[in-house]
Image (cartoon, rainbow over all chains, first blue to last red; front, top):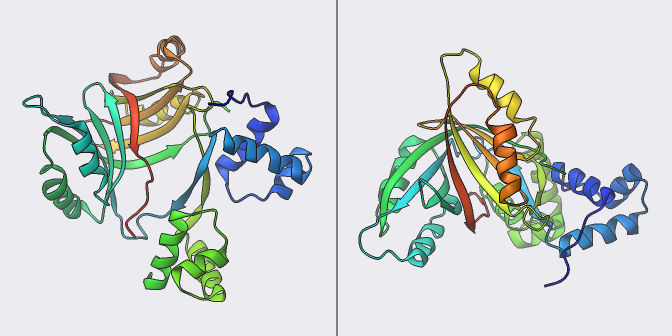
Length: 154
Length: 151
């Protein structure tokens, strides 16, 4: 592992700008921050290599694309018998409607983000694909109403 | 409405958002002019809203990530608005979601380490208005994160 990169104020400004809009060009960023284009490019590459800048995500209108509901599922694995976490993780990540899978500690073992066309479609995914997985115990569903992503401590 | 060409282009863009239109068009098997037109139309229709840069907070030194799930005291008419407005002021809150279900609001909170988290939790989180109950889920690992839509 390489030494951790300690970002300076300029790096943080670049991160803030790209977090809001990853399509910003290096000349535009350079003008805004008073840096040359190669300097911006070098910094972005360094942040990229340090793993701090971890790619891009599309911001899509889910509803317009036919995904009317997003549901977060808390899944507790059954205590009885020996449940293989690897098997569960392999099976759950293979479901296309399951967008994110997080292993957590607390009331649940896993936290899943699931998209579906509508509630009936969600029920189908839940019953046929999630609840049939080996080891699934208690499941809690919360339907997403709104979501905000904040800039964080940059 | 979206047709097959739009869907093919969006699928390619989802798997490689930084790719050029030329590359995306080639992978989707359509001409560059057509791809440019389609992306422009998707943008104008508000379907393609933009691209966010993803920050890996762990790589920036924030080793702790906690999901805090709140039920609010709904006896207050503006409990939600007041809670959300106050939560937005906490720098370590990186996501706010509201739900229909047993949980009203979820905050994703990051911290450098456990003492730092403890400090944020006591000074900032417990001070948020109209909390009826809090549950926390400590993030252990991300197994899948692509958030790619099955378009």
